[in-house]
View (tube, helix red, strand yellow):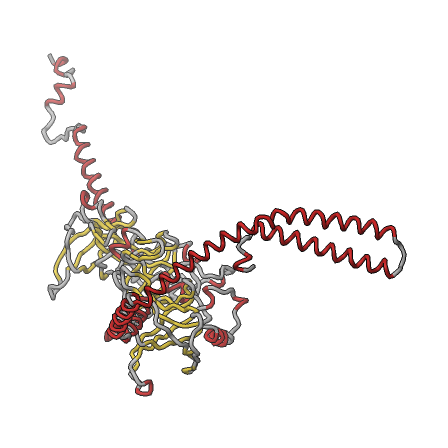
Length: 567
């Protein structure tokens, strides 16, 4: 028994151990899930703080289309931040938009950065932001251009947002320029800039001078490489709307583009001198003049000008500065002024028309002699050159000045008004026609038609009395009797001349035979005797007589009445 008790099993000994002994704990795999969740949550929290950049505030006029926690900030479709909150300013005029930017955007947040809201916009014929109809509005961000000296700007966290997209982006190469014009017409922000009908830029905006006086400044941007086509003497012109004109070819309608029709536009071209280099290019911010039309811009390119003037006393309706001055239908200049002259020295009111002749329109540069053109026009006036108003279009009523040469003109002289040569004028066009009709009417009115009628009646009455008088009747009867006698005498003469006419050929033949015999006789008596010479003279006279007789026979045969009426 004792031996059995001494050899007890280990299990029995363990069962007798006290409860204070610690037991081994087993690890369950289900604990991995919460551990991983904690690790992932910590990683996401760390990543969220690591990706967060600075918080900035952008002030806009309105928060239309912006939603807190959803609206994003993008640049080239890359998300750079998210709107965290929207609140009104203290004066309730604007809204402050709090934006949490992403990490890495801090270097771009400088005083050159720009923000604007991208939403659907209609600007003339241009529609932008259509992609936001489905995705919603977003805030566009542009870091701005870097300075030429490498200056990237100063860091800041508060910005003033733009209400419209800027015309020039920092990543778009090109240059900005300025146009000056008294009026802008329909040109607005975003209007296109054309070069040979190609859209090469856009209008950024315009500035009205203080007080509203002076020219308006229009800022525009021209993209590269088209900005290299601009030179200091480049000319811009307005291409807004539709241009309608009537010319030799009929009705002409010209429209630059559909966008220019609604939002306006400007265009420019190359100068006449194409021998230019890169050094001759216009630098950025160069100021150009904006002309009303392409014709005005081309006219401004002519440097040689001859000032002329003329005075007219007829209507100048439809004539205005800019009207054409033509010679033989070819434009050689334009009208510069139309003014009413009430000078008492002239003795009556008249209209002074100022003109500028541009010889470069019709002459080559080597054919123009500076200073000699005025003398040339004086010579032309001596040869009959006169200025007159003429109709340029009967449909529109436009009038122009025509320089024409008049046949057998009355004497006229020229005069000088400072540098301006005054040439004589003559009524032309409808005014000339009306003046001619008025002159004819005046002359007709001055004719004594009533007296002429009375005299004609008296003449007819006297002629009627004379024709019915006995003397006229007796004269007619005598004339009739004389004609009968003349007819009878002619018949008798014709019958009496018959035998003579029949014997004329026989007489001619006998005379020819006599001449032949005389020639034989003359040949038999040769020598230089007196008989020989007398006989030779007689033969010559007989030949002339025979010839005359032959001519008489032929003439009387063809003209038998010559014996009565003479040859």
